[in-house]
Image (cartoon, rainbow, N blue to C red; front, side):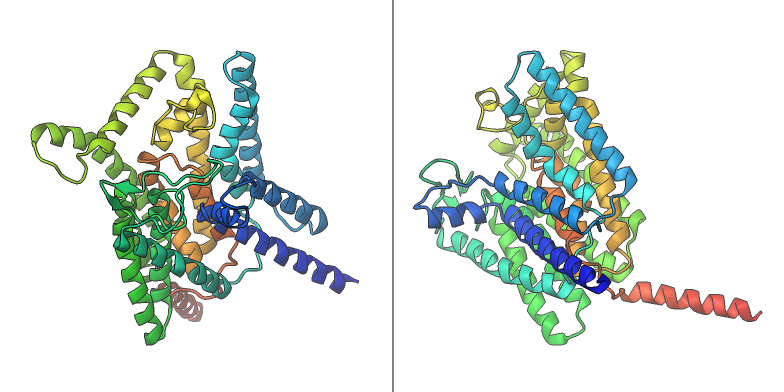
Length: 441
């Protein structure tokens, strides 16, 4: 009876792991599902992506009720419940004040904070997906995605439809003065560039962890292609993050980077992003020439940031509790809201209190990921960890708050590796030798 219960639980756990893994991959490659729907329904996208979220929640509820194996960390529950209570208060505040409809507020919270809370609650999920299986799937999915992006740029044609008939799906900013920016199966080149940061880190991690010379050569060739495609996406943020993520992965495998070293990289990523924001206007006024960061898009962002920052300072309540507004084209209230900065976007939507919650939860998720995978690194979790380590770069120049918890979930869904890197093994061996010698004294 006990054995049959364990077998049943393992089967359910395995099924849920695969369901969640597939859903997260579809979210990460964020135009894959809409394009599949366009193929099946004559160019239309009738099924919204939020249905995948509902499926995930339902699956986890069933898993918890049947298996009862998810050990929710008490601190994570307290943080999540408190944050959800604050969001509920915010929703009631803005609705009763007569500013915005409930559906708009719920849509904004779902878009921005759903995955953040989910990834914190699922940080201790017992997945059955092994490292080798995850490697094969990610490689099998990502290589065609990579080649499609390269082909789009070299042929200088989108190769795929850039919008659906019903207007639900559109590819954004793919044309750069007549040159197609590589976007592959994504909604924008920026999302593709972000995925390439992850995939580049993943390929490098595989190259550093394998002992076979033939495999190292193949991974090196693939790494060169990923680096080339990162450039073809013509996304400054992606290139900036890529240049930091790659040495971070190398440090984890070859230098044994732990939480302290990775924390320094995270802080430096934030400081470099802030320095870039401060330095660009000064340099542009001092030197009258065109360079990579002196163009219309960059200065439009500076103008937007300045406007929203002054808007918040005009009223202390706005600064503390936010305004309820967020960047979206689906509601008339938000059509003119363009921020492209996660810190400021959260501040505008749910205020300084909400920003403190958000940053703290992201750091908490990152800390759990470090504790779970850093001593026995495997490619998928290490790539996700490296990406999350430089999240301040993406946060400074974008609003894709949902991207980073997705990669955390992807890492949590891969079972920790049983292997340890060479440096960790050396440390363990030296510690054993030290303890043995002292025991003999």
